[in-house]
Length: 250
Ligand code: MN
Image (tube, rainbow, N blue to C red; front, side, top):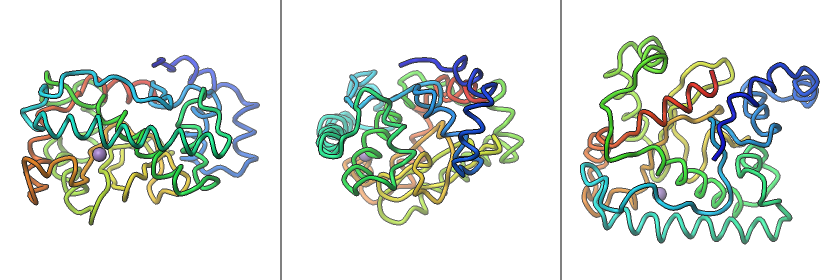
């Protein structure tokens, strides 16, 4: 993982690359993503490789919200399969797996459904694991808290709107807090394993917080009660990581 605040700043000041992005007909949010993709360092202060990384805590660390068996199956079966299948697709489609997976997601319309589903699945889960901790602070602080309060009226209102995005996602998918092309915080959701980095996505931008609302993420403990899972999930959000992602892009 690599902080890329510096490289992102140097990109912004690099008018030649910016012109390239503009002449390529990229939208405002597209150029924001492209900025990171072209720098080769991924996005949000971190880049995601093609291999599954070790879980940053024990399976039972997040019991306040997610039981150990769910974590074990989710990480070692579901997420592991996305990584394996992504690498199969990358080999078949000639993708350079030494580059960040974000580069592929930004151009996912050019690839197969297998690449889209498993590239998204791999990226989303790597992002999700890092978004949680056993030692959650209840809320962010500093500039991120200010931006959330000004964008969504209050932190509680933000939690309600974000939770609704997860509850109202029909079937499987994700809820996101992301930065759009105007550097505004937005809440949205995507179906299946799509995410806002994808050029095919209805919502586009750089994610800083993601919530998996697939049944496999909560069914053992919560069964059909997705709202209860979402309500508890706030107890394990790693606001330090979310703040770092935000700060790296602002
Ligand atoms: Mn999942």
